[in-house]
Image (tube, rainbow, N blue to C red; front, side, top):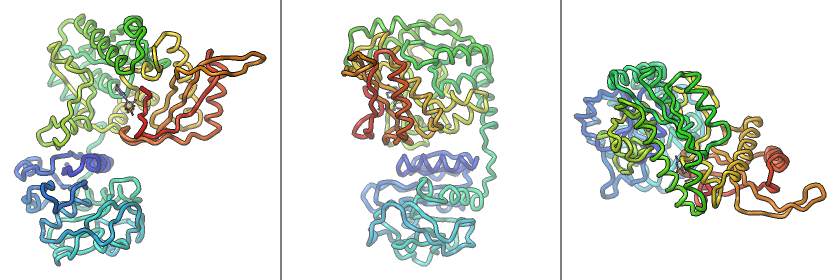
Length: 510
Ligand code: XMP
């Protein structure tokens, strides 16, 4: 395995994902992980991530200096390079020119294994104010940029490398290749960490934990819970019971797909809780967004609990917690605990019901969960489905939620998604949907005047859903969506497109 020391969460996660793309297991750890623990984990390589701090600032995170004496190859990236250069006696200073954005990297040592296969010039992404000055004789420069004579460096005696630019971001042309060179050519990793093996490992782990007890898995219709259920089904077959709460706020065809997948295809013990009228009843007359969310959360717990207690002898509750949630929750003693944020998909439910929690996806990133889903035989359109919020269509049906409005919204939403698929844009657009606005406007249809509802189309591109840009959908696609919605969805005479980015807008409307 390779350890990534986290000096700034987002870049560390990107690095870990790039390393895992090489089928090398990679774990994110806190920046000051003691050297004894590092030794125990027996890594083949260490990567020190970039980060927002300046190494000479007071309280700037520092690694245990002992990690440089382990003889394990180390790669420092940006801040990580400055950390290691400083630990090895170089000086770090604010550069004369701060460098942000794209710049050209010129390779000075083409025979160096770290740079194997790189063209003599390529585009890299820089983002730093400090740089390493005076390599103190200990380091050799392997590559340069216009303003940075030491953009890539290597220690003359030990396997310690540094990159002043960010190989993990997509703007760096051959960044993935560079990281692959580090883990294979320099650390000697063989790339045997594959999804198939991982499934086998998880299946064995689940069987051992669970024994002959019964496990409950809540299905939402989304990717994560579906993969958990498919994996558990492989592991424990009929010891698995799935609960699906149909809250009436789902997209078109979603409830049917859950039934088909988990009732017909995987023959799990599927409990569908038809809570449609319970949710609609509780939402009647409520138009405040926060209030709507609260009600939905409460009703969900209520419905789920009712169903769960009807399943005898259940001891475990399975959840689709992913690695980024684990990193951010600070739950792992080796992990970076910087941002403590509790993450529970179903609140305090497991404790309340006396269940033990199992989280078979807790070491995986989203793209790995998708790969696992495909390997387990889930259909592509489920595995690549856009994320969908827990409160469902209720937060896209602005104002009061009624059965009639939901049916209008569901029909319009299905058209948006169909047209994106038909245009081959569904995957590139990371999230898209229709919103039903509480706005009526005047139109003409045939000879008559209409006064009807407005549908807004929302489509965004984003990597992490924390920030997002509106997606520049081609005019023809927007045109087809508008024509179809207005012609076939009763009660709608106008379609508008949302061109706001996040921030300051959010992806959802409520
Ligand atoms: P916003 O609207 O905050 O959404 O920009 C960011 C991402 O989170 C999803 N989202 C939710 N997911 N429960 C969820 O599981 C929720 O209550 C919820 N609210 C928003 C949203 O769809 C987007 O992908």
